[in-house]
Every structure is written in structure tokens, then in C-alpha cells.
Length: 186
Image (tube, rainbow, N blue to C red; front, side):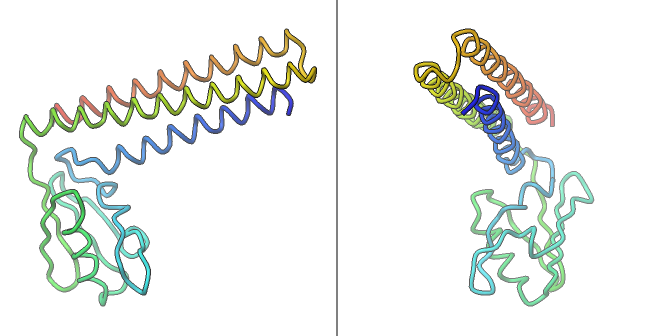
């Protein structure tokens, strides 16, 4: 593996870690209605578990309301059941065609707990990025030991991987800051 391939692989994995964290942040209840809150709730229908976003249209027409319109009205009860059983603690109102989910405001204490939760998610993402860096550096050391990379190439590759790590951690910190402000401000 060349140093460029090692760097590209590390960068790709770090970017994937960022995307995963962004998805996790979407599913965290902030007191404001967003379709991302219920997007990935799995519904047991048609003999398998399927995310709601594949079974219904999800909109948030108001800051405190989510509306789910199933493509197939016969699965409305299944979707409603999945939302009620999710860890979000939401209640539903159904008129037989759509499901309305009112989003109650969060208490100050609950907001603090959510901020703590997103800090833990961010720290896990940072650990993942550092592990990617460590694996890439191991690969570079191996390539250098096997005389496939020169000492200078290895040093430059490690510096570049460290730069990727630093840049991604900065993005993680910024995402954490934005999400924290969003939660505490509402």
C-alpha cells in the first residue's frame, strides 16, 4: 500500500465517523420537531424491520409537531406502535390517515442530560478517529520497515494523517458546540 492510499483510506474512515456522529445527533430529542428524530425508528411490517423514512413521508410543519403520512395506510398502526416503543418517549395521535407527534418542551434538567449525552457521543467519535490514526500510522511503519516507503515519505504521511485527525476533531468540536447551543437555547 502506498502512503497516498493509506492517507486516503484514513481520511475516508474519519469522514465516515463524522457522518455517523451527525446521524446520531439527528436522532437526539432537542425539544424541536425534526424529521430526523423519527427517521430511523424501525417498524416491524411486511415481515421485516424497516426504517420509518422508507415507509412514510415525515414532515415537521411546526416547531413542536411531526406528521407521519404512511405510503400504505394499512401499516399506520405498525408505525404508531414503533414510535411508542422507541426510546424517545413520544406519544402519538392518529386519525387513521396520518400520525401526529407533539414534541413537548424539555425541562432544564433534561437539557443538561442531553448535552452530557452528546458530549459522550462526540468523545466516542474522537476515540474512533484517533484509532483510525493509530492504525494508519501502524500501516505506515510497516511499509517503512518493509522498505516500501522511505523515512521522509513515512514522516510526511504521518504528518498528513495527524492533520486529518486535527481537522476532524475540530469539526467534531464545532458540531458539539452547535448542538449544545441548540439544545440549551430552545
